[in-house]
Length: 137
Image 1 (tube, rainbow, N blue to C red):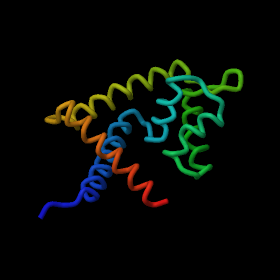
Image 2: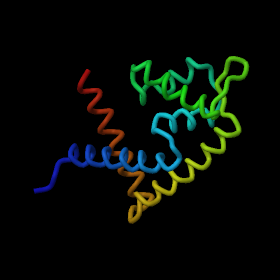
Image 3: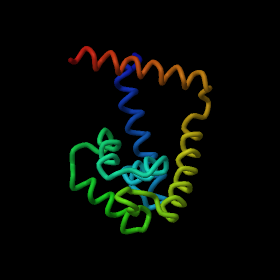
Image 4: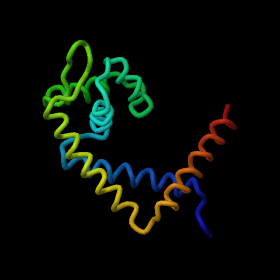
């Protein structure tokens, strides 16, 4: 018998997280540190703006946020200019290197999956997520 979609979603989520952790470990980055670098690569932010942008991924654990960001500051990847968090030169270089690795991994994970198939899968999962959220209210 075929497994239900929930089984495959959970299995895929676990596999994607494990693969991303493995990929980022090559750069000595955690997934949360990568998310911070990725977010700050787009624009500098006030600390509360960064916190708001990362909250859906990081949750409510303030100590975890502080520890992850402090590690990036300690490694010279994030600095503050005019009350805004920005990537340093080292942070930007690390971000670009990590992004290349993440993109290579994404390409490897989607071998044999066409662009249309990928777009359809994402569209279906998005709609199902919205439906489930609507029904749980």
